[in-house]
Length: 311
Ligand code: HEM
Image (cartoon, rainbow, N blue to C red; front, side, top):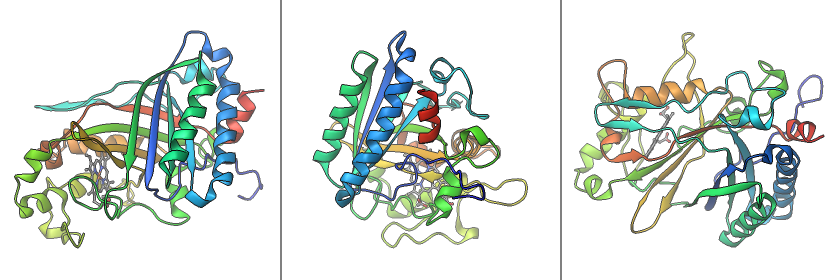
């Protein structure tokens, strides 16, 4: 609780610790569904919280987020101050495409069957109101590694700092406890990646592979992923985001389902710009081996906002 004791309740999945399995559902709303959806979404958020309590043994958690392009239709009464469409960037043969989606439902736990059950409940509640356009199932790979074999998430904020990074605070009182969400589904070119030497792979990330040690500052190439994404504000503070990404895929197509949660959309945008376009003539060499095929911007409001909007 903050000083007035009225900190809105955030959706549990936003800051949750990692799990073994994830299930992502992307929906587009049907025409006219905005009449019924505020109540249905408040019900979904409440169900996800209840399910988290009932399934604490497998650490179930979830959240629902509303697409930037659909927000005004669904909630015309108020809009998060910085909510904007996905920032599409393009340079040479590198493209970070935007593909707007109306609703994103993020489900995670340590049990595949519990995720499947929750997804079934989500689809039942949204039947006739929204159409499922994509489903992706993610999994933990080894010791929290991306399919490139590198540990992912090391520099994520930890402990109470996760909430400071991910949740809107007093700067936008009506939307406190909410979070700006960006997703991108990356498809890796595993064959190309595996042809690279260990040295090239480590230079590409800016960390060692097996031991996951950060390169010292002077040894970090300007094209290394962590060099491109570790950005500072004007006041010298870090532009921190909370990454909730997980590997996904099968033997035909595999990669990373990237997810950023932040109190501002600006940090993700600046990092993505730095990866794709660069401001110094360099780009992220990770992009030689992976390609984003989707990109969407959402806002995950607090449970309290959703309850209010359903009245
Ligand atoms: C760090 C993988 C996309 C932002 C890392 C690390 C890996 C990684 C292995 C180092 C360990 C860590 O600190 O987590 C990937 C892969 C991606 C991807 C495989 C896509 C296929 C992105 C995107 C962004 C991003 C799109 C933001 C626009 C970051 C940040 C860090 C990081 C902020 C921490 C940098 C630091 O302070 O050291 N990523 N990443 N990543 N990544 Fe990514």
